[in-house]
Image (cartoon, rainbow, N blue to C red; front, side, top):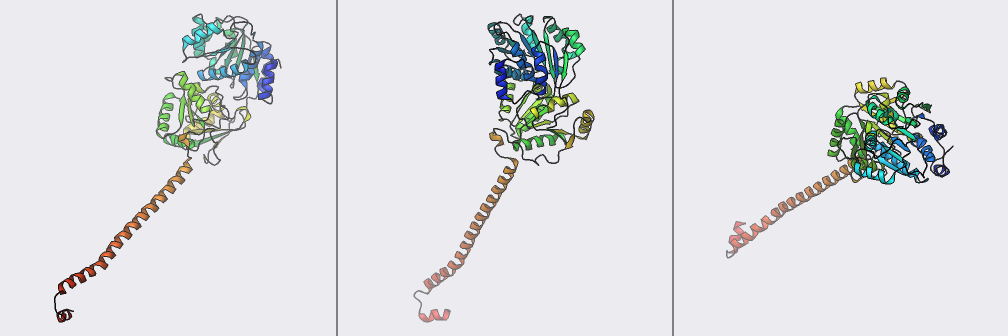
Length: 442
């Protein structure tokens, strides 16, 4: 592979071998060819484009040479972290441009450092370029991560504004888990021919897809039960309003829960929520589709669709957060009969949906670090409550017995003492009487 030796050495230390998409893309992308890499989620697409890009960077040139665009702040931050880790091996500098962060600081950093790679969201990148802070005419490569989400009609004006500032020789990299990318549209907008490279687009066999017929109230009960069993899960919602409502319910039940996807949250809050979830310090992370696009959460055991997705494409992206890199994963779909029937129709034969018989037939995966709220499992609580109740009952019985003993003791005492009192009184009356008088009375 045409990857710098320093990167090869690190790769061999971290991984056994390249994934199929990496094998298929590295050489072509390193040679400057524009490609559309299509592969399932969790198969190493990020390193499929990061390593060739790092190998082509001219580290002596103080200018931005690569732009990587992502549909969400979270995915942009995640890709930035990967690029910085690997870029440090070869002296490549990386900057992040995302909405929600301080724009002035970002601009100052761009002017001062002139990073080799900029990773960000389309809106913030265009703001910086239109302000003269970021020069796009020096770029040699532009990558669209989650390209099916980026290259849409809704973004046409912004994409055209971007294309107008790019050099005619720019290399394009499109990467996605689903094939919803119109390559003719790409050519008409960016004037570049893109080679499709499709690898293993079947659904990962290691993921178990289940469903449960439930009403709205039962959904929250299931989530509470899972959290109390220390089961970590990424929970998807179609709308922010439904997410916010569920979060309030779970917090009221003292469940360890956070969310990303709410429009009114600052970027730092969203970043903290993701960081704590990855560390295992949060049981449930509630998300919307845009916020969770492309998130890489290592060893995530479970994805829950609290609201059933409306398309197969959305289902693929949601479920791809678990079972990554060939590892086992589980998906639980919660809905009524109508919801599940529509989902089965939408997915066709590509996914085998089975009914979840018992959510806890298998021992749940323990979160890496359990919070205080999750200290006891539900079974432990039941056992503890039963033990406490028995102890309290025994104590009540003991107290009751003591009271009975005291009452009985007093009663006997009164019975025993009463005749003595009469004798004492009688003796007092008899004092001074002749003996015969006493005998007569007896």
